[in-house]
Image (tube, rainbow, N blue to C red):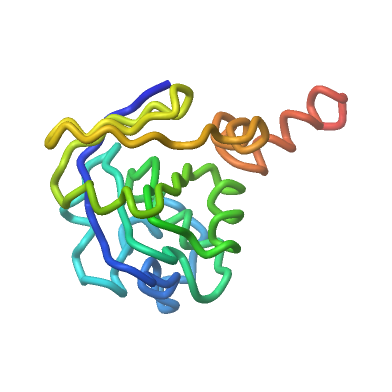
Length: 168
């Protein structure tokens, strides 16, 4: 399952308050949260985003508080994946639990620029930058992480398991 999207590059140490400021935490509606995605970084940022676009970040993306709203805001903005040098660990786990794919590429992130078009093929372990021709190898997701992405997050995964057991 590969997908293609336009890059929206952000810097290092983008915290969860930049992704979704506290004043927007009055809802769990993913669409509403998406409307305020990155408001703490740049007001109106989300208006440049189209469904399927990709965030590319420097080091430590998602640092700060462990609010689950941050991955929901990104998903609600129509973004399916975040590629970064590195992620804050609690954000990393929260993102997969919510169904947001994260891809850690280390220093290779410097080969990707704002506005580039990326093709990501997680199963092949490859990111292809269609704009500049860069090819970046990515480690395969663990089977469990891939399952969480495929199911749309932990809640959907558990619902399906309970249904299979007749406990829905």
